Amino acid sequence: MKTARLDAKRRLVMPGDLAPGDAVSVEALDADNWLVKRLHPDRNLKVVVVPTIKRLRDDSKWEKMEKKLARAAQHGLPEPE
Image (cartoon, rainbow, N blue to C red):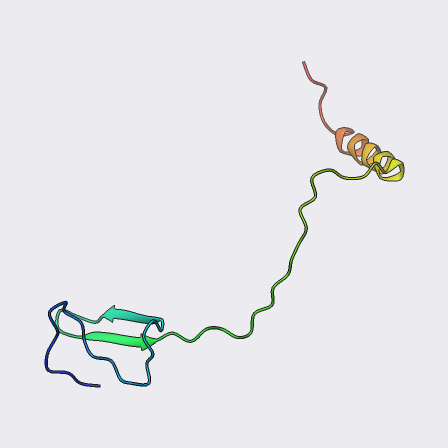
């Protein structure tokens, strides 16, 4: 695409296969040269929905295990003053 003029709002006329509202990136190479690229959406995306957990259920087995882990982690620590 080549254009010789800009309109009153300093816009270039893009090719007809580029629909209005399409995403493009504009990169200034230097003071006189600009590079315009059409952005294509990435189609290799997967969306994973993770529910928000506000409160965990009471689990006595896990609480016992958690206490054992805490005791083991405290074993090598110095006593607080």
